[in-house]
Image (cartoon, rainbow, N blue to C red; front, side, top):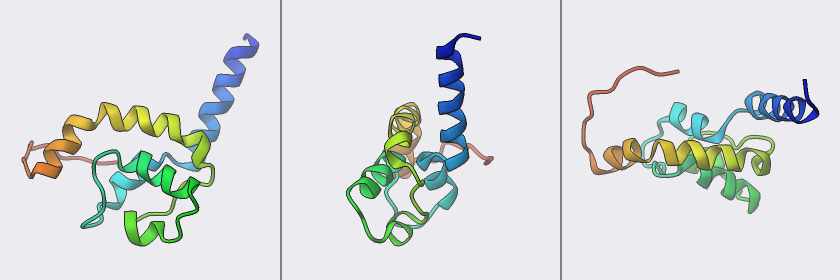
Length: 98
């Protein structure tokens, strides 16, 4: 394995062990919590020393929000159509979960 591959594997391991903010906010399903870019917002909230992530987002921020931010931004962007539909109250008939 190349050195770069090992570094990427370590980075992915760190991100997955700390829990992605986007996945955490999807699991929380708190009424009134932000839906659009929720994981990215949670990371930025934690980076700006937000005091009450549990009350605002329904979950705690990951321990390393700076490392999680790029992955959360990417995942939030991929899930943006679903987030917009949820915010607008459109039922997509999608079920399941983690």
